Image (cartoon, rainbow, N blue to C red; front, top):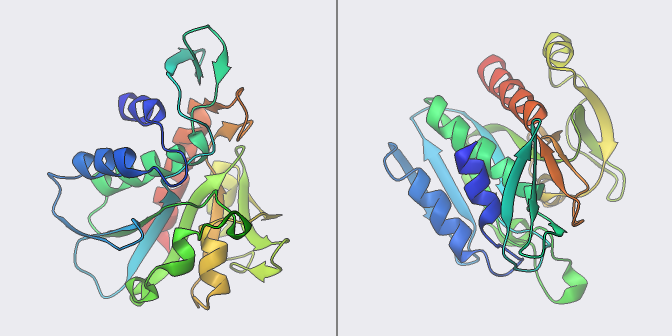
Length: 241
């Protein structure tokens, strides 16, 4: 969990993702892969050679304002306090997704990864989401996109209620995999894969619970066992579909 805790210590408020992007690229610098950083700051990584790729995605940014974070772990729960001993957010939404992407890049031979900027920013604030403006040709040889940007421990979001967008069929992930790892199809909110589907990406996508709670709040925390279960779940999907 050392890399995860280092991610939590990095402040990456929307629009200020340079430090966390550098950190992520340093973590994969020794791996045999190719990466592209577009003009918006999104990063697209390809590992291995294949006619079709599984893809995982996450976003660099968080909602928490920059502050000093002292990362704590107690009984399998990771959280943070500031210099006054007060609880502060850790940006587990979506640094958990970034950590999962890094671990999958290390353990799999063939994978694509899409890491987006400014997912937390809304267009009415004068910002564009990175997934609104990226070049979709990166996904031309991708068979599905799994985003780990969902709270809790058992949700596989297959439909976005706010945008009324179908991300994938409820039977996209085989029932035996869902049961083994304790997941089930649900309806959920907006994230990068929803923006991609809204732009016309015609491949299955979903958003997956990755063990964080109290997103966007000072009391945000991660359940380590649930995050690790998510890693095994996503890895099984990649290897089985």
